[in-house]
Image (cartoon, rainbow, N blue to C red):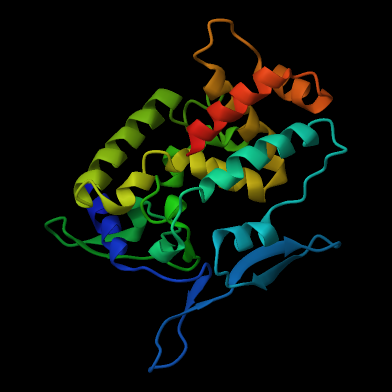
Length: 264
């Protein structure tokens, strides 16, 4: 099955615009679908996983306020992480019009979940168990998670696991292809504007919600924005300077502007 067929099917979700962040639930025949709470897992003191419900939420900001992982500013890197998150997280909603609504986000668009007929025409998509409504910037038009792995370095095994991971260059090529096909499917307008940087915004989202992944994602963002500098610098050195207050005022302003441009 050609990838453009899957992307074209995904683009059909542009028809649905919702009002809250939550999960789809079936209520009654009169009102077959409603937006219910978000569901997640939380480990208790005994190591047992429990289902936790929260929301639904009217805004992205409200969702992030409740779900963002705690910041440890007593930790060596916690101060630097907090400073970077304060810059990039607001970029997720900057210029966002709440009237545009919330959209569906498919949890797993791998090939085994796409049904086709004998001619290769898509007849359905399955495995919607964990479907949620999410902000447009990380909704249905975002890159599938398997081609954004290089932006979550803690979970990315390249180059040590070459047999099971794609290289950064390969992943970038896949993203370019997906972006072109999503643009064509949406007529080069609408939610397609969110596709190109969706891997970066997804990384910011992950960093906000998961403290374990946060440092490496912050490091990745700093590395990317500093790549154009003639003098090569270590991203961890910059983060350490932020933590210790050794970053000069001009350097901090420049870094903020570059990070905002990266995510916005």
